[in-house]
Image 1 (cartoon, rainbow, N blue to C red):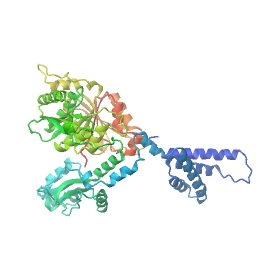
Image 2 (image 1 turned 180 degrees about the vertical axis):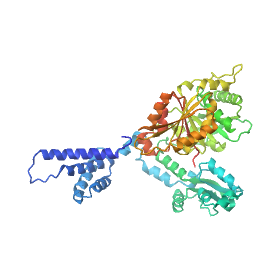
Image 3 (image 1 turned 45 degrees about the vertical axis):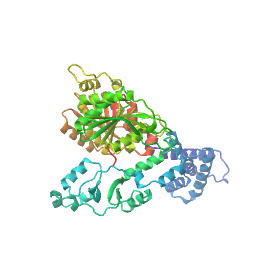
Image 4 (image 1 turned 90 degrees about the vertical axis):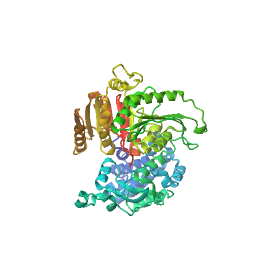
Length: 563
């Protein structure tokens, strides 16, 4: 049913019921003066009528069945059957099956007026990214190639003194001559000077018009000539998803900005910042262990965040809160950072909404990577991972790493205290026992990012074994293992540990990965966030969420910063 969906079964069931009616009429031996037609006519009419009732698309049903036969004599019975079926079905049970599947997942599409009004009122300011990666006009071409290789972006604004002077895209680089590629050419000589831009107050309609008219994938947002943001197609898709799911979040006053009630700062010696929201004392040490492993390899600083939630009718700046317990947890995080030799900043915020507070910290503190714990499943309607995690993975401008802890990692808090000859970091690694790693490959930038992140996470293992796998459907005529081989080559060049490769043929991706994890007794599964469409997630489910729900081991989900 997952592979065939609802389309083919509706046509098959309708034709079977119609043929049953036609065969039954012929078996009654009615007088020849009654031209009851052949069973084939009833089968085709039943196919059209059943599909019309299921999808509430009578015209679509008529066109589909007519195209199968190209018989004009069938038009009248098909029209009658589809219209009657539509009217009867709508009278008995309003809404198509697709609408009810969405409602079953908590997504209600009947409230269109308010959502449409919000959508029409959006401006460039509402959807743009304020944190923009830029290049200098005097940057050598060689450095520009390196910037493209490190980033998922397909284009960069060129800025001098805060003012937009051009834009450099992959198309510009592809048009270079061999002589230009070999020389030290500054970007000012090859960049596109005539840049299509928008103002912060321009409507979303104007933005969509420009993207479509000039067939471009990004629009710089400027005030005068100053670059204040950028809009990509991914930003518009994300805004559209937010509008579709807008009724999931609680109605009422918009949450006010969070309020910082406590803050400590360490020396700013890192090359970037990694944010860790901490709330559960039982899993805090393990989550900090994952964060510190990445921070040490990248020379990042850690930013530990505690959020105290208050009702929306109380302004965060006026709320009375007790932060004694929160400070104890953050002091413990600072001590762990000293043991890991990683600078740790801390802050406590009072907020109406956890996700909004996290996004504020990402913006204010220029966070490069967010690492969060998640339960592996959620009961929140319309959410795949949970309210705060879903918002972070869709809207955070930085890289995101989600960690669902395996059963053997829960409750290790306090067991990794320093021993006479052993640091807390070494003790934690010994207790975590993350030795068998499974890395499913599915293509795309998130899967590539998972491979790039793996060597950093392997610092938590003493004797790891890595297995790369890729799931192919049996119906595929050929299995392309190019990406699998490239990932294995990348890891073997950087690691001295065994890297195994396993192509797998199966009907369901998540079930195949779960079976492989159980067979190999894997300790960790690391995978990139899937880019499944909204309707596919609703009907078939989200693959990472299904894997996390079906496995007892640790599952790490990564998502590259949105382009």
